[in-house]
Amino acid sequence: MATEITLSLCLIVRNEEETLGHCLDSIRDLVDEIILVDTGSTDRTKEIGQKYTDKIFDFAWVDDFAQARNFSFSQATQDYILWLDADDILAAPDREKFAVLKKTLDPSTDVVNMPYLLAFDQFGQVSFSLRRNRLVKRSRNFRWVGAVHEYLEVGGRILNSDICVTHKGKPERDSARNLRIFESRLARGEEFSPRDLYYYANELYEQKLFNRAVEFYQKFLATDQGWVEDRIAACGRLADCFQSLNEKDKALQSLFKSFAYDVPRAEACCRLGHQFLQTGNYAQAVFWYKLATQLKVPDGWGPRIEACWTWLPHLQLCVCYDRLGQYELAYAHNEIARTYRPEDPQVLHNKKYLEGVRPDSGKIPPLPPYGPEFGTGEDILTKEQR
Image (cartoon, rainbow, N blue to C red; front, side, top):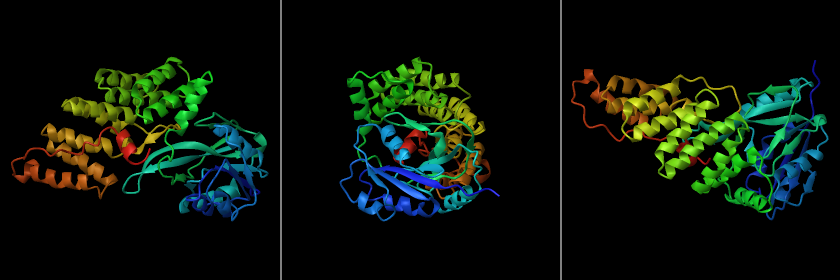
């Protein structure tokens, strides 16, 4: 019988009085010690933390998340280290799974990765997720790398878990913070790694500095290095930049470039479908949306816009087939979308409308409605707090 492992929970915190208690309440009874590293709170964060642990450490903020996280790991004393942010929680079903994992984890395991649920739609369904290495064996001394958008450099025996960490945070309180850190590093003459180039471009994109974002996405892709999922995502973001700059041909070229890195992703197909839908090329839009519905969800850890892999292409196919006068197909795809979003007012509107124009209704089709043109999927994520 396996011996139950011991766990250190490590967090870096700053002005987290609104969220810290919720986070720790969701995990406190599942870990053996809690390490809080405060990087300069001016609110009640430390006072709240003292209700859960006496292991609270100060760390002078130096614009480097990896340094702060490595310091937090250095304070841990248990077999394994779990890290969370103060606005993360374990939901009830995941608490149960985590309790089982703690009792049964093979001690030869070096790393456990978990899905990270980052955004939800208005119906409570996951709209954006990715995977993170969450639980690591302390004796392996794994290190964090990167001043911004830091990551754990790991190796050895890795377990892919279905235990989810749920992000409950509000939109970034200082949305330009990361951009300022990158700009400061550039001003000091630091040489950016390919990963830095990608994430710096993302920060420029978020601030709607599209021309500069294009420059750094292109620099990143020109290195021909970096994680393949980042390269694919960079192509999608490049397309969005060009779309915002009204350079539609370049937007299309960027989307097609993503296919050079791996098999098509549903996100790129939905973007392409949207491009053709906007210009009234419905048959071409159908091709790309149909392809999105036929793809297998990749096994990788890359970011995933769930809508593009589920209901969105079917809802857009409903629009396309309606515009083409193929009402039975429009109805069929709307019904598939309804299996994912049974209470969606747009889906229910489409159902009622299409039941009135199908050939067996005997009614003359009215002009098509505006239709559920939700766009690419990326704009859904923007609305739901990327």
